[in-house]
Image (cartoon, rainbow, N blue to C red):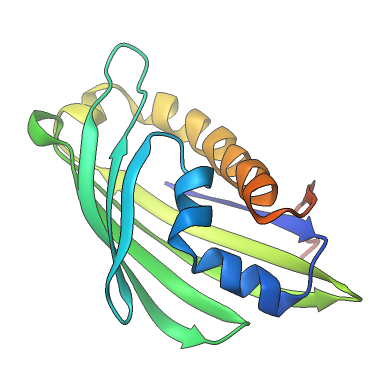
Length: 156
């Protein structure tokens, strides 16, 4: 499943970059996140309790940053185990661009799941994904003290 979005943020790229790499800001922006901490120079350990309607599994996993261009872009890859529910994994490209004094953040993600999670149906997870991403960036803005405005997709 592929999903993503574009967001205008009322802060310069360097400030957005710092907030994207701050565990306290991320914990405040990720619903159900009980743990997120740097475990290496380019890896974060995390634990998230996910609301899948009738089920509320806790996923434990690791996020890895690659293709890092400071204050400009990186690829974020993650894999989480949800016990008997199976495995969820994905990756996202995060790109920051100047827009005057503000920043445009573009987020392009691809993810999937296995085991019992897939029995819940791709449609349920896919339909929820965009809401979850938009909600993350809304809470990210609050945690970072900046305004965040979702933007329409770029014209091709």
